[in-house]
Structure formats: C-alpha cells, structure tokens
Image 1: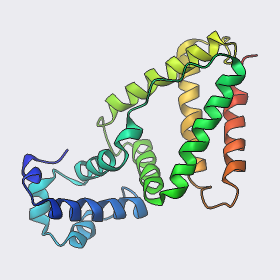
Image 2 (image 1 turned 180 degrees about the vertical axis):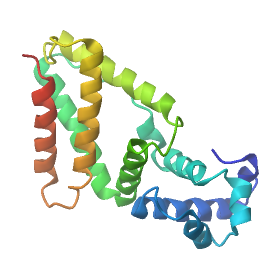
Image 3 (image 1 turned 30 degrees about the vertical axis):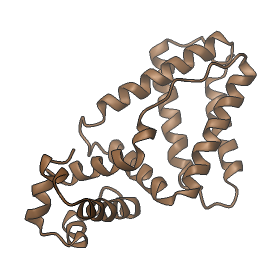
Image 4 (image 1 turned 90 degrees about the vertical axis):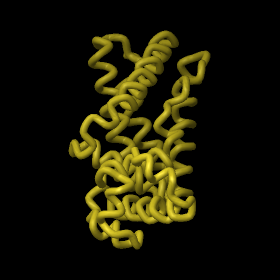
Length: 201
C-alpha cells in the first residue's frame, strides 16, 4: 500500500498517478515497464519511490482502488434447491462478465491480477484475500452438497482445490471472450464445464 506521504499529496496529483497506473496495468499487465509508467505520470523515478515502495506496491494500490469490492467475496446466497443453486451461480457469473464487458479497464486489471498471481509476482500480498475466497468457495460447496447439487464423493480439500482451479481457468478464458460477440454462449460453455465437474453424481 502507498506510503503515508502519498495521502498528503494534492488529490488531483493522486488521481493522476493512479489513473495513469490503472490504464497502464489494464492495457499491458503487471509486466509493463515501471520506468515507462513513471514517465507517463510526469514524476521523476525518485519521486515515485517517495510514494510507493515499488511497482508491486503501486499495482496492489490500483487493484484495491479499482476492484476492492470484487476482492471481498460476499456471503453466498441461501438457495433452496439444487436447481436454484446452479441457476443462481449461473446468474452471478453472467452478471460479473457483463460488468467486465461494460468496463474494459476492470477486465484488463483482472487479467493482470490473474497473470501476476499465477507467475508468483505478487508474493504473499494476496494471501488474506485468497483465504477469504477459499472460505467463500468452501461455504458454497457445503451449501451445494446440502442441497444435493454438488458431489460428495471427494475429500473436502480436494473438492475445494478443484473448484478453485476450475474457477480460475474459467475466469481466465472468459476474459478473452468479452469481445467474441457471444458472451452469453461463452459463459454457458464455461459454466457447464465447471458444473459438469462439480455436480452431484
């Protein structure tokens, strides 16, 4: 997160730095040259390090600012049947991807975040968020099992690991399909792929 000095900057200067960084990370990912990004802000390299420890620090600040609500998984809805469970999940997925379609910058940041996590470039910075997401997914699976929607023939830790991996794979692929002309069809395909792996036998 930013150093305390950043909070003392003029709000217009703060906005300029974060807007430039957001645009750069969304378009080019975490691999964007930090020196080039700094140059785009109009600051010197020394000045940027006065406000942020490094590129990772700036990236995480941008993610929190732009996608903070997405990084806080809500309580799973309390569905009443297996059919409601799967229909509800399908609706959540459709809503999320439609939002990304309307907000290309948020979609670009999501791609950057997934890539940076996968390649280990963020270290342990997102451990707390990943633990919250894991707890949310675990609760979702338990509810699905109670309703007879989710399979119960696997150890819970294996089921959770599989569900998390499936979700990330589906998200990664769907983010490449936002401009395909058939987003609903793509969501259907990805959702059926996950459902087919998790559905009660």
